[in-house]
Amino acid sequence: MQIIDCGLIPYGEALELQERLAAAIAEGSEDETLLLLEHPSVYTIGRGGSMVHILDPAITAERVNRGGEVTWHGPGQVVGYPLVNLGRRGRDLHRWLRLLEEVLRRTLAAFGISGQCRPGRTGIWTARGKIAFIGVGVRRWITMHGFALNVCPDLHAFSRINPCGIPGCRVISMAQELGLPPSQAAVKRQLQKNFSALLQELLPISWRRPATPLRSPGVASHLATGHGIDR
Image (cartoon, rainbow, N blue to C red; front, top):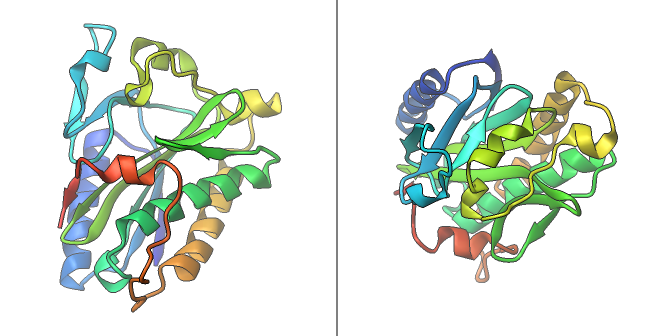
């Protein structure tokens, strides 16, 4: 597993990088990879997402091959794109989403923030609002897209949409929960640590699907439409 910190990178460039890496991982010529980065301000929407959730007609949203509705990425938000070969790790999409949820929860806990899942909803929430987002795609069983964690972004950008297709969805950041912004570098270190540990714990190479796959609240509904999944 290689971990690459891309810094601030335009969304289109990051998507091209994901596509190149996914193809190489599928061919066996590249290691599995976790990309950590920030984007300049951009709105994206999943393949099956509805434009009705874009409240400001001036917004142009990038239509991408992932599950989920419209969301925003921008400075102050740490984005993670794991490119992992699920073909060698059990081919269990529910377990993959459980892993991403747990990475985010453990990372928040390391900073004293309690994050939870909500039944029927993807992402991670605190008592004050949604703090982290998950939207995945799979190509030839190589994962793409991933998660976004609000560290200290300008949250006004979310007021122009129904985040994740949820009218009235309140969005929060780590900075607001803590009263001051944590170090981006420290957040990235925790994400790397937790992702590496949980990948080995929940989806080791050659892991076989159990009789009853591990699930968590919100996962089944997220996958029911099959958005972003290209086996």
